[in-house]
Image (cartoon, rainbow, N blue to C red; front, side, top):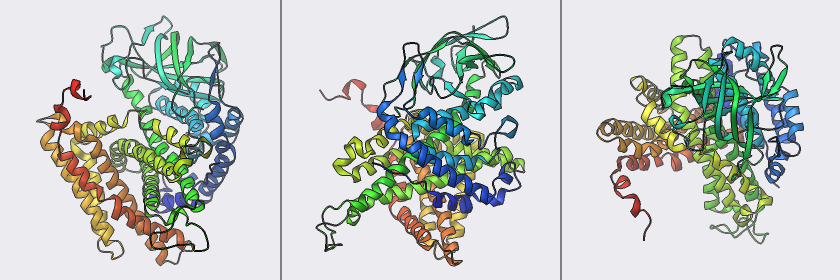
Length: 600
């Protein structure tokens, strides 16, 4: 049976040394995040996910969700009770505004708890996770009346939320959507169409589900410019806030999918359902992007969360399992075999996992801090800088984070050998669950194209130049510290590869856009390596300072330094190969006619 222990010590280290919660105590929400309160959130949140959610992960996967003849859906055994505990304990309200019943904690603190929830039970975590995205869209674009009607019950967890984009004929290309919104005399719209792959589209956890739906009004352009956003509740809401009639939206079926079986992924049929316009007509995609960007950061966190729990179990298995002897001679002569930990190739997989997971955790939490600063920093300059960094790094966190999360999960499965392929050990579920994160909320190829096609050139390259400056200045400063000089030099080299690849795009892109498209995915990974390198430089600096000050947790801090060295020696050198791959261009990639791809 698998196990899970929330990485409390590592989270605290990052919040203290990388995020620096105490440095932002003058900002909105941060005053609530005192050290004792944050410790309580992490401790109690860790207990909740370990004791309540984690035991349901394997059983929920085995049972899955069930659609009934009336279109209703029930979640696996124990999920309703666990969700009730989640709501009663207020876990979903952590970072929501106080005016709508939230605790107004910083987003970065809620992100730390969300990672634990994903590791313990990714399918369960998706139910409240999607609700938070819908809340964000309504707070940004909804009218005061819509916010008052829907948001308080969504914040409390009494009601859920979804996002409805994809249709059978269109996924990424939303200009192809066919769902129609016909205006009605009372100011509402009749929504008709079919949406697919709708996570949490129908379930029995909440009294109502508030769907945010993309549709086109009559006469709208047949492109993304014609898309509007509508709020469509499962049950209509009366003026006094009570639930009224069932709306004309139903779950036609549940998708039979590879993983996350305990989350109901639905085909949703809208048959003249009553909805209301959110924001301006034909400006729906901009409104939905608010929800999509929040979801993309959340999906990046899924890559981290599943990687962490798979990694933890692989480490324990490597401790317990005895196979073969160390290359340098028996490590345990009194035993018939040594543990897996003596084998360099097992160490390779585990050290790769440790270095990337801890780097990703720092990047995800630092990215969450930028979300807080974007809305609450003291000056316009700070808010703009945070917004630029969030925009630039969102596709990296989502794309690189989930690519690596899946890789770590499969490597963790590999540590088990044949047992990793057997259901009872739990590892194959983590591989299946991690795989979807590379696909939804924009496939990782789409994330890469968003990065190179939009984010690099946005505002004259302001965001990427700011990122280059941060990394360059911190690496240059660290070279003056003997303990950090080697790492800083290697980070400078990786940054140089990233800057050179960026300049190559600038020179090639106008002449042949395929050059950019062909290099987009390796570029995303190259930026991911540099971003994690920045996090590891900061963590190594903090660990050295803590050791010099006589900190008590010496083994933890020394492990940080060893892992930083491993990242510099084994992962950062990949930057050069990625740059060369980018500069290999698109000629060979685009030359072969489609009919010749399969050898006859």
